[in-house]
Image 1: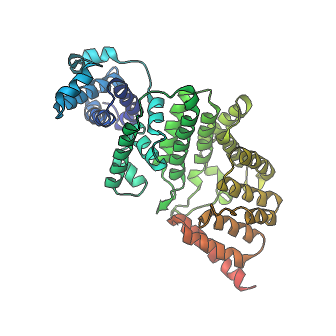
Image 2: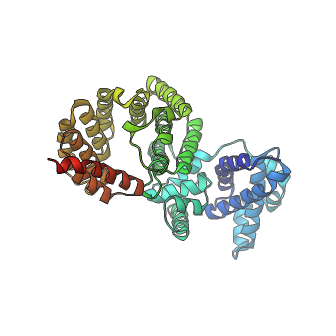
Image 3: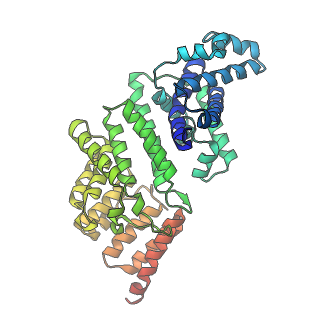
Length: 419
């Protein structure tokens, strides 16, 4: 017998490859995905007792092709659809396991599928949802729970995304070279969004969602394997590993948030740390430095410090200056202000914050209030710091963050009252 965990991991790995093979052969995103899900279910039932087939990928493609061919023949426009299918594969081939096994190509279509799921016609949330469904192999219910929406709502979002790709003329193929750079930027951004939602959930009772961070790392490893010379892919993977390494120390046993400066670094994941440090070191020395690589370098400086007090804040400031030149954004500047405050004193950080939100991009964002509160506390102004901590607590939808910010404010109550 084969362990259920091993089979689950294998099916999740093979899901995008099998879907890619069917899309390349038949098209029909909706129908192909449904057939793949049925094949996965059949495998989950049969493989634990019967053992793994010699060619698991070929087995899945064969079963999914049978289901898809049956489905296409049973639809109302049977003759018209059969003619289009026959142009690509004859019905006899579709029903013959041996024929399908012979046709299986040693080709991984995962990257092509990722690019399709991140089609520019889709919104960011739709790209994330479709990627998790089609490439990650998560069920609609799992994705809905991750983003705290009803399953029916998520099902509609995924269905609309597929229809939008179809109506916009999206094809299952790699883009032309001139388009590939922008499409890969979207792919990496989607993977980063998935990781961030898992590492710090935007809402709900849990601070982290390890299933989402694990999935983001798994998918990024796949892209890195397919594009080993791409510095931004390597940088993103290193950033995820170096960040995820801290997760065991980010919360107390009761789920309370523990900030980086107060974490027990002995609890960090040493395997992820070593892998991430080696990867970013190799990337910085051998490839052009992109934005994800710069962020990974910042994470590496934090992670290499034996204690929070040993952090090389001057180096972090220099890296943020480079990052702001390459990819200016309010969030980058906010983090830059924190680094300046730690390296040059809280007043320097507060001066940077004063000019940060001139365009209103961070209006109402809890992190702006939280950062200002932290710097005000360091500057010796507990009354103003307490006000901003409470404002940040009101602005966040994450219950652990809200509790942490309220706790910080409560600690300052005595100091502010005594002034």
